[in-house]
Length: 277
Image 1 (cartoon, rainbow, N blue to C red):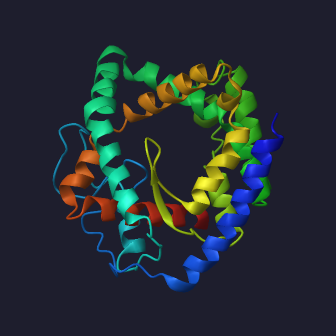
Image 2: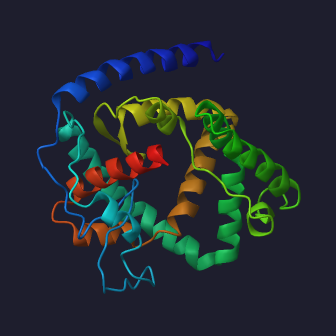
């Protein structure tokens, strides 16, 4: 049953290697140095910096990623964006999905369920995603991080009651990594390839997109049957995660002159930092 997906994965890796090499030879982003006075590192829906403004939805300063500002300030972004028309279309599609669908649901969800419950759910999902972090830590030669992941899973699954609690972190101070196949490819010197925005999923690159395919094989949710239930579980995880981030995407849109470029450049910077960790 998994033969075909594995073949697809290997073919995707070969394609990624080809395009990554082409992009590395030919493209330097036309925007030049990125000024991070207003924008810092972002993931699919992330945030920006506004030194003195307090967000009414976040309840804290908007410059939550300020720690990355000095590291990236003045650096140019090197990423191919040959699919810019598609990417901009998907950016606007995801933008509408967020404001019209995901955000209202997340706000209602936040109103109904207190933070302690949502945090427990967040811990649970982080615990079941241990195989992704554990395997990629091993592939990167980070045996200590892999050991931490294994020990954390054992303690949190038992002492933490199926992972809803995190005694491994709170009591034993065991650190967790945040590794995935995209970072593993990067650690082996594979470049981004080109930038691409996927509907619902959000910003990515050729390298990270192939990495998502690899991560899928290590994600327990992928093996839930029927597939509609697996999609429902995935969406619930996304909804719960968004409930902690309401206001971040709005902040970057407000601060950025060109939101599409700000999120693109911020994503590339963020992933570069993760690979370098």
